[in-house]
Image (cartoon, rainbow, N blue to C red; front, side, top):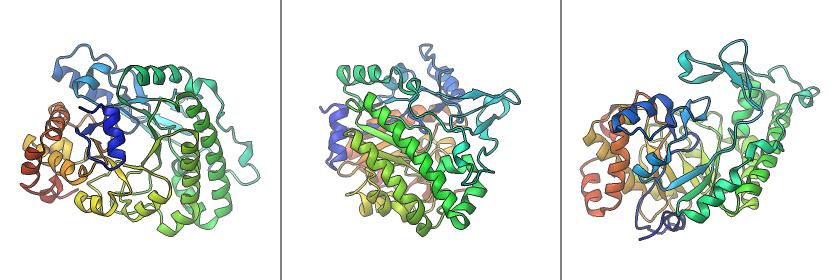
Length: 398
């Protein structure tokens, strides 16, 4: 039987591994702290003690306990950069992140929302006066080498380098303000390029230090930057190709020059028109395959069109399906996505996004247990998949 790491290498070479790869626990792919408590109570497992070990302060997700990862037979372990250069706010509950972006906590810290744009008034003359994050802060990656080395030498798990917050576009949008930066891309290209170039330079420096620490031990580097909405792209393909694609490719090329890793790129939304561009941007794995959005519902067609050039991570919807599906519907959806995307390797099943507290804990358990079961039984998988289409075949997306 292949180890998780051997399965990963086979899958990335578009060869059929002898088991389905399962993932949970990274940035944009973990579990909300309230859902974690509900799941702990449902399982009756007092060894799950990480409900206050926050992974992502904005989303209020937690780092899953090792006992839970083992219970669900998760094949991945993620190395997470330390939260650094963060200031707690005194005016309202919330914080200011390393890029100077203020966040405000919603009621009872359910989640946090962006609450201002520190560079809204900046100009080309003042852009360098901004207090930029220190890319050489030694605290950001302190202790990560030892953790990665231990996992590499003592386990067979696939080891991933989790994201450094966001990428070029999302950082620019949050620092400048969404409305203002979208206008900059069209009417003030010089400023937009100057801002993105400064963000890119610091991200490259951070990734250099990051890979210096964990590069010899990890198999994946994870980069995030949202480019789509539920129904369309956030900007035109031409504007993306002119302004964003060269910088994203430069970041990806830099990361892969620092370590022998597969690059997993996260973008929510309807990004089908850009998938050829993603291949050219040195992307190996597309995350999250958001099946509730326009263009990505038909995962069979997606695999047919791009399966020889991209691998896929995710495909289990948490917006509509996981909160509302019956056990039978959930089983059908799991089988459909494995059947469509798992042919000839190149697929890692995972939630499309964070597991929110609107999802019944029994559906979380069913997801991972049924996925593991079906991943080992091709005949049963084929029978269930051929019963019908996906969850969204019979449920209109709101």
